Amino acid sequence: MSELNAERAKMLGELVQKAREHFGRTKKECAAVLSLKPADYRAIESGEYPISLPQLEAIALYLNIPMGYFWGSEPLKTEAEIDFANLIALRHRVIGVLLSQQRLRKRESLADMAEALDMEEDLLKSYEMGEESIPYLHLEQICRYLDVSVSYFLDDLHGPLGRHEARQKLERQFNRMPADMQAFLINPVNVSYLDTAKKLSEMDVDQLRQVAESLLEITY
Image (tube, rainbow, N blue to C red; front, side):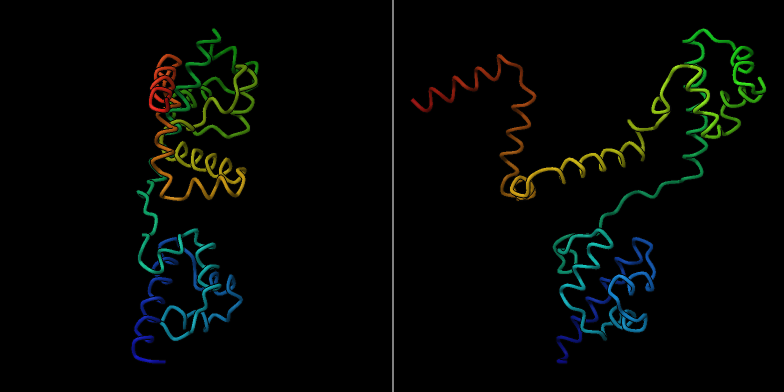
């Protein structure tokens, strides 16, 4: 291997290592994906193993990164780290408030709800105050009693879960599209067309009529 190739192999190995560590995967896991012995995978990251294009593609798929990352045209996705302990504590309080609001909306007292659900009134009060986490099965019971869906308590509009759910929905919609439509959407050349379509979708009927009339004047 020439000196130039050795330098590039080392750089490529470092990119693989950085991506693996960025997404919290182990060398053993990546070796299994590539059907390699752990020692051979370690050699990839040290630049001593001649990794192939299909193997790079497999790493990209496994780590969910763009192939352009390996030749410097695209960065790794970086998202702000979530403080899960604080997030969970905050969500307990938010769910408690929502629970209290729904109970009052249904004109139910804590005492009546506790009796109907065979729970301690103090326990339900601690749920509403966010002092006690609500077991999911208890939440289901409460939802049935208050005639509300569990989704009412989901953090699906704001915060990390909302963003996660939105990404999942977009991915499902994209995957259902025909291949030619997918190719059109991911082609950077078509960004201006998509931007125009977005603006048109936001117009009311009168505005669309004006656009159509303007186009007809240009045509004729």
